[in-house]
Each structure stands twice: as structure tokens, then as C-alpha cells.
Length: 335
Image 1 (tube, rainbow, N blue to C red):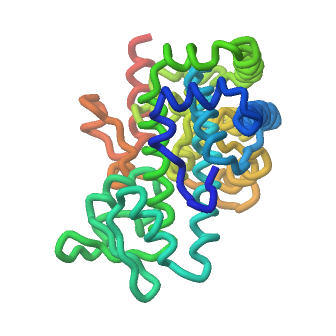
Image 2: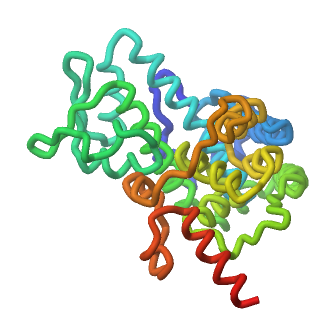
């Protein structure tokens, strides 16, 4: 995906005419990149079946073709898995190319239209780039209140910048994906409809086996934030670390077993069975001896993880568990 030029060719992906020429060319090199894209998507589905990621590097042309194939398939969960795995490849490449020289990251920024400079091992970026891309990253280092702003710029470490660039990369990929016309994708792959339909069927068969079940738990009395995290997972999304921690500890405190909590996370784009099991057992005190509580509403708000909207109960409580207990009592009185 990331070649020696380091960045995906977004202009190529948006060029419907050029994509048609590559996909339907009789040139042997063009055919090879079509096969490369097919191989990648087949591998992505196989790894989904095994609950594993698929962080494989592709050529620029194959990456562009895979994006158009995903638009043809039109399954949000599959697209999310693609984006998340390529996001992780992107971040690894950032560290690889900048191992000896931070200027390599600046070269990428120049090509991607991102304003940034580097000096003495740190990076200086506009504060609006920071707040645009920090929402899904947990930790105080990514909260604006802890940053020093001077003339509209913020100085951050390479680690912080790499995480922000990773999130910016996801936004760029999704914006580009959404710009692809469905009808154009169907026309471009007119020779490959059978193969792409087969990939889609295989993905849907696996997805059907990974449906989220909450058992006897009453989803209707969950606070809006918890509902949002679960819906994001159902849609094949990739909630932030803090959102996952909040969801896992909330479900534990309302009585759900660890194994059932783990099953819920199986639909996330980057699910890893052993890691998820360990984290949940740690948070619930099974191996740590400490039962962690969900974060307070104030913490969720400061990390852009509050979805209260105009919910009247959210206005009178300060913790997700208080919301649940309040609704539970109200439902009990009604009965």
C-alpha cells in the first residue's frame, strides 16, 4: 500500500477513467495488479474468519483497485477492516521511513497537504489539525487543554504526530472511498462481477456468525454512549481504546460474563482474541485483583465520547452506571 513514494495516490483513486483503463487493460502488468487486489481482499476475508488482522502492503495501483472493489461490494464492515489494517501499515511505515530522519515525515506531509515542520526531534503543527484528528485517540497527551498553543501552532512528539497522521489518513481514505460512484464501480468491474459477488457472499457468511448478542440484558436502558459504542461495533467500526474500556467495564458491572463481553468485541475491525480476553480479564479483576469502573461522564466528554444529545437523563447524572440504575428503577416502577 505504501510504496517508496510513501503515500496512496488519491488522485488515481478518484480518476474513474484511469481506473477503468487499468482494470480492463490486456497489459500483463495491469492484470497483475488486478490479481494483487483480488488476492488482498480474499486474504482480508480469510483473516476475518480467523479473527485476525491483515496488514499487508500493496502497490499503489492495487490499493486503488481494492478501494474500487470495496465500493462495488459495498459492505461497511469489510471496508472498515480494510481501512483499519491499512491504517496500521501506514503508521508502521511512518516510523520506518523516519528512523534516521524526521524530514521524511515532512515530505509526506507536503505531498498530503498537511502543514508541519520539525526541529530537535519534535514537530510543530496547526492546532486545528490537532483537534481535527485527536478525537479517537485516548490519553491526556491528545487533549487540547494540555497543549501549549503559540501563534496557532502546537509542538508535539513524533509519537503524537504519528498517531494524528494515522487518524488523518483514515479520514482521507474514507472521504476518497465515499467519493467513488457505485454505478461507476459496477461498470468498471463488468468482467469481474462473479468473483466480487463471491467475495461478498463469503464475507456475509462470516459476518452472520459474528452477530452481537446481549443475552437477557435490556439494551433499551443503556446510556446513549454505550449504545453508540455497541452500534459502532455492529457496523464493523473500530471504537477508541477508551470507548472499549468503558463498554467492557460497563457490561461487567451490569452482570455480563467475561466470555460474553469478549464475543461482543469480535466484530471490531482489529479484533484479537488473546489480547481482548486478557484485557477484559484484567479490567474485571479476574487476573488483576482490581475491578475497574467505567469512566465518569466528564472523562467521556473530554475525550469526545459522550453522545448525550438531548437525553433528559444524561442532564441529571454524572456516570454511565447512574444512567443504567436510574432507568432500571423507572422500568421496575412501571411494571
